[in-house]
Image 1 (cartoon, one colour):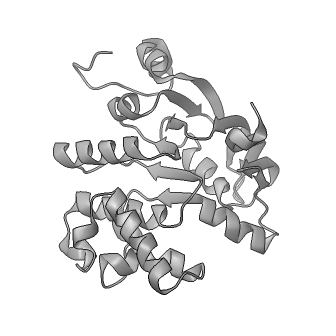
Image 2 (cartoon, helix red, strand yellow):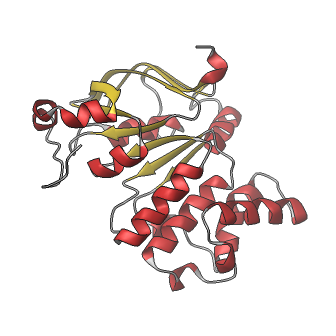
Length: 248
């Protein structure tokens, strides 16, 4: 596999917080362009810590992280700005991302700060909102939308930056069945690398061919989602459970 086809490469990533809590113990990971990968694991496994290394929110203390072949280096401020446009994180609560008077202004915020203006900016906003089926809500205040609609707008704010990697934190949480299905259809339609942090194993099965289990700061399993979810002993060991009645 050539390096041009790799969206994310992590080598021996280890991290301890200032209080001494060791969150990661040498993570190695390679994700190809266009892959959809579920990141599974119990609470406290290090999933959030890992994700926060992808765009330099946390500085790399040991090991290396490469996004689209570029080293994530917190000392390289200009390089970090580029990395942050390449790794889009959609938070669990869309209200953490939506703060402008209208949906369109929220989606325009990132590209505007990257220097886009006028017709070029309008085109990017229109494209991103169209991708999530929310263009007709462009002039609406975000707080007038349903929770599922706000999550789709949050995805659009990230897509407007044309990222290399889309990271979704618990994308199905608090969604009703229709919103859950609509979001799944949107995610399937995107030609982009997706990393989905989730406890929702059926959603991982539906959307991601590959899954990782991060547990105790290491990658405990990496394989086809179907194979991982069929392994009851593996799931039990890492405090993961399929809903009652769900069969693969």
